[in-house]
Length: 303
Image 1 (spheres, rainbow, N blue to C red):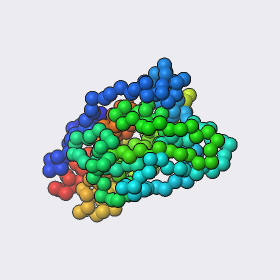
Image 2 (image 1 turned 180 degrees about the horizontal axis):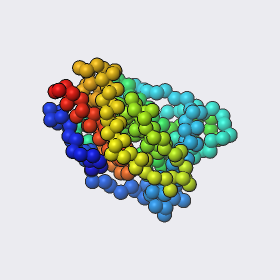
Image 3 (image 1 turned 30 degrees about the vertical axis):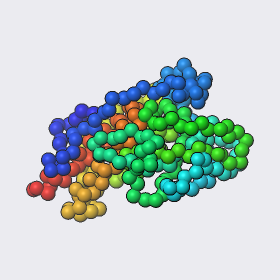
Image 4 (image 1 turned 120 degrees about the horizontal axis):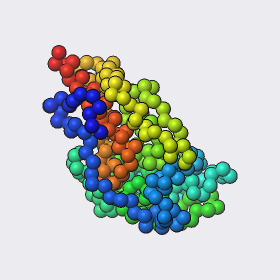
């Protein structure tokens, strides 16, 4: 997004980009969507995404019925994982995940995200011997992530007491921040994402209307709720919060922790080719707020 107020640049010694650059986006594969849901073969991609947003609550409810490990040893990943399901009559089969992602960090530059491949997982730069697991819906990934490697086929799970999910090794630029993108794609909650990027400001952020297939079509973009003045107030509040928690000498370090998280999310988004405008708007707002907070903190140090 362009600077909404003045020209606030990062302190020169930090050498941070003024804005988050956009990659050349690739269109989502309609063939991939049709192979998963033939009824959606001729439906515009944005309507597919709204359709998925309307199912977000069902997906979250279905996840609460699953029992699965949060991580597995990286060197011994099975091709599939059996996930017990607590009996219920409320969650339709389509609400349950189709795959389990085992995520690690790939080797690469913080400024040049690399597209994930099967080989990149084997050469990943994970500092730990275990990798976190994320249950995922193939249709959600197909609707948002055109650069994701092709997923293995998932068998029909109807009427089973346990799901047998293909376990997919996936190397992304920042495994530490993958949960942010994973949650956003499955919920379409920009307010929750921004609060996760700027947790100290969570109580200052405007709420978003709960996503639904009907309301999402007419809702204002979440980032349109932020004026130039409100962004400036948020930046000052963030700088003040960092000073209160870390003291005058730790402000820049505390703010740079936010930079690292936003950069990690940005790299994952670029690597997977996610072009969702609301997601990019939230990242832009978070980056702008942190950049101005850094400038304010640096000016106070020099005063």
